[in-house]
Figure 1: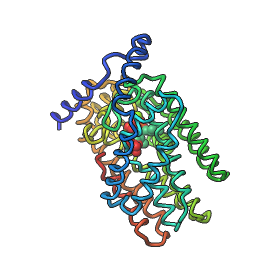
Figure 2 (figure 1 turned 30 degrees about the horizontal axis):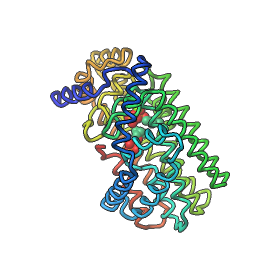
Figure 3 (figure 1 turned 30 degrees about the vertical axis):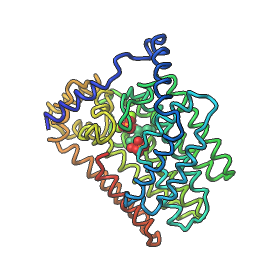
Figure 4 (figure 1 turned 135 degrees about the vertical axis):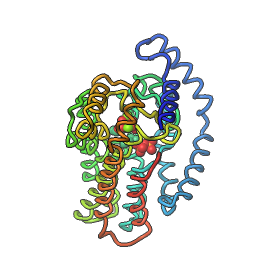
Length: 381
Ligand code: IPE
Ligand code: IPE
Ligand code: MG
Ligand code: MG
């Protein structure tokens, strides 16, 4: 375990960009220009998009959770490609860079599964699924700037590649594009759900910012952050799927409870993987949360239940955002039971999600929704 931890840390350090672009603006502009040319060569042709598309569809067909909605996923990919187009080359470059890296597409899957589970037969769910993925991608572009992360989806983050300014602005573009697409649907209820979700996500990220380097953050405070920054978009995605299919208010609320609980489980496991995951599998650096001094549940648990020595270690690391003690912190969160506790909390949330859709008529879509609950907890990526 120790050896693993040490090797992972070396790996992530190795990937950290040598020059902070935002501090060397002139040099940054030069590098940005070079990188745009380089990615133009790699990504410019739409054949890349097409090959990514069929690969994505193949993956969807092979995955038991998405097998039944593989055709819908392909349609969503097409919408994403069409709506991504901008006359500004840099927007295309960066949006293409992050979107072509893939991602699990869990939020679009929620829209599609819920819509199908409620018997929807139209195409409005494709547009909604793309809107939700655009919002998610915008939050990732912004989140990686705020977290100073250097790796996402198995490649350098957009901020490491193109700089902070470009990442933030293209994140704004994706947000705005998603709102344009959503207003075209001309449904006030859809606009209410999505505009509320984006407000709450932003609040969650700001709340989290306030918690940085604070070792006295409580479990309740942490839950509020993750329900806002992550679970809210899961909730919105599930509600929109039910809504577009004409479900009644109780059914939409049940779908929302499903999404909320699933999203909570998903983020709890994300926070476990930030310590116990494998960078190659999660496609992100291990140890980013510790480096930032981010008090997630594994650390909060040690602060509340650890030995005096463990508490002192965690307090110092949160206050200083100290990555040099990663192995000692990993040992503390493992031996104190903090990682197991966080996993159990995720299991409880996942069970709550499954219970929320108990009344949904049996179907292959419902089976996939239930499998997602298991995936959210058992996942290693
Ligand atoms: C990452 O979400 C952000 C969190 C809420 C933890 P995902 O793990 O769904 O990211 P992608 O889209 O698959 O890369
Ligand atoms: C993700 O939180 C939440 C949003 C993107 C809004 P994290 O900061 O934990 O996600 P990762 O680990 O960077 O994906
Ligand atoms: Mg982050
Ligand atoms: Mg994380």
